[in-house]
Image (tube, rainbow, N blue to C red; front, side, top):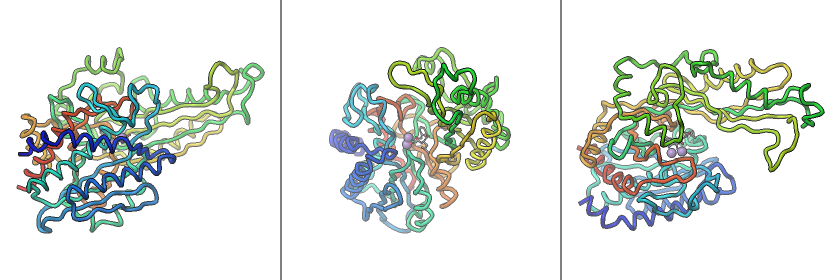
Length: 451
Ligand code: BES
Ligand code: MN
Ligand code: MN
């Protein structure tokens, strides 16, 4: 019945998703503030049409949160679905093979910014809900909380959650905003990394100088910044910030063995990324490096002259944005402080250094012995014919730790993307198959969860 409904309505499902994807809801860019709101209104309307009892746009200091609920019986369990309707900026635009906000299907994949992260995955939940309403299958209560600031750090969501604990009362959080190992190997994410995001500024002379007149006699802040950044890793690929690893939870031999049992082909990995060799912290596999080890990466670096042609200049300032991915039991605030202290300590006396923290988030591990995890596992078995493999993802969804802390709720991370979907990159895409199977799996989840 569910399969038939999906097949009979898939063109409409996709057409509706396309309308949503056409709205450039880039939360980071204030020029798109109106579009972000339009995307909120859009999902509000679709939830209303699908049959929720109540749906509202909740104002925050930033972009609004869409909240909806369908309470069929207060004594039944409640699932709280979380997702985000905001998207990453689309640039660099020239690298897209089709415009980011004009969705198209190529090779059975939907190409558009937000197709996988996260509109396409949120829309699976809206359509799964529609199916359950239309076919009288809904067997528990559902709440939806779809936010518009995930890609900029969910600054206002924490306040919303703290102020609306009664409204958000539920038994489990369900999120589709992560990836599967592959279409052949369904998986359920059981851990996410945390984040500390920093910006640094190194200042040398009080103005840009002629690099011939002064070069060689005055420290160049870009050269200095590069030296400082280079010193943040040692020859074994370990981060050199004192105390950085102090709180890191080391996995037992058995846990490591289980983690590395997930299918992973290093040659495919290299060829898909166009790299000749992998690189990372010595003594750990790729799955460990991205899943359970903390990291430090420069996300952007700028200064001096970067325009057309050449300009001989010794710049006054150099800048970089640096992110650190965190694992249990590191704390974002602590790591931010350790970085700040260390980065100031390694600054030579011939420059001034400013360290500015951006957003952060705590790492999270989700239980695999809960009723909800069991329901997710059975849903995958039913729809995909295979038992899903538990995996640790390297990305961050800071709200997962916050839900646990504030609401005492565990999350099931039932994501349907693929690492190769190019989220945050040009040509983001999402498989039509992932979308349709995802809807079916979500419906199956409710069935097993309510049993
Ligand atoms: N959906 C991603 C996180 C993700 C991606 C988890 C792939 C697992 C696998 C989310 O939208 C995201 O991009 N999060 C940010 C963090 C946020 C605080 C800006 C991230 O991970 O960089
Ligand atoms: Mn996301
Ligand atoms: Mn994202």
